[in-house]
Image (cartoon, rainbow, N blue to C red):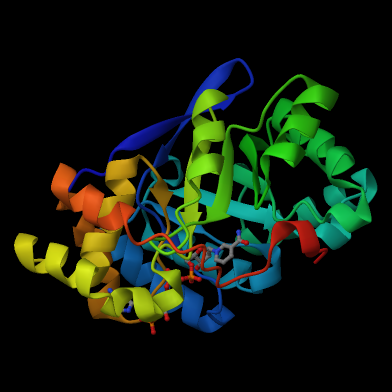
Length: 278
Ligand SMILES: NC(=O)c1ccc[n+]([C@@H]2O[C@H](COP(=O)([O-])OP(=O)(O)OC[C@H]3O[C@@H](n4cnc5c(N)ncnc54)[C@H](OP(=O)(O)O)[C@@H]3O)[C@@H](O)[C@H]2O)c1
């Protein structure tokens, strides 16, 4: 199955990110090797990790051992807010690359704005520097609100090309998505299945799934793809890893999208970015 590639602005060029990827939060290092290997085997070509997940080594090992040409696998990692000064960020980046075993990273994100630390602008400038040096192909952010995104644009003249945010049927982030669209920022959804919580059992999701002969998780992932989100479901269960990848073939119609629209309830599974400093 061909997964669409979404263009990301990257300085004077463009980098393509596969729209459906594979997340490895809360997966141990050894387990990550097994899960990422399985994901690559069934067809994923995009893996999302972070220093704080403590599984960059296992993730990189699976990429290496897969034998898939490096240029065909898109790897994202993230900088944790405790490393936001320029010096700390450069050291942390080198450590991330050593653990991943990679020469060049496809996408590097600021993990949280961490407003209380007051350092995200310095960290963002360092990411742009890493891109200019050719060590990262594209740079972006995660968990940024419009206020923080605007601040980066004001300070550096450039909006990030992507913002990875909590986004699922119970937290649809309409205002933030509209802001992204206005500023050519790609929306990437984390916890796209709301971490496997009650959204999977929602009767409306079940009705859309039954109509298309797919599972609730596939209906939800189909909804993300229809919205144009980059989406990175996590699973350590081989059947679910394959099930989620197969959602790349799900095509929802307007009636289905309307059914999903009605589910938004502002339900966060993770922290509020305005009140989290890492
Ligand atoms: N930037 C950030 O701050 C941030 C924060 C959180 C997450 N993320 C990224 O987003 C990725 C995904 O988020 P997430 O891991 O929180 O949650 P998720 O992908 O929304 O859900 C994962 C949970 O759902 C279960 N699951 C997966 N597929 C399923 C299926 N087809 N049917 C039923 N249950 C299913 C998994 O169980 P099993 O694994 O047991 O199968 C796991 O418990 C992370 O791995 C990470 O890469 C980023």
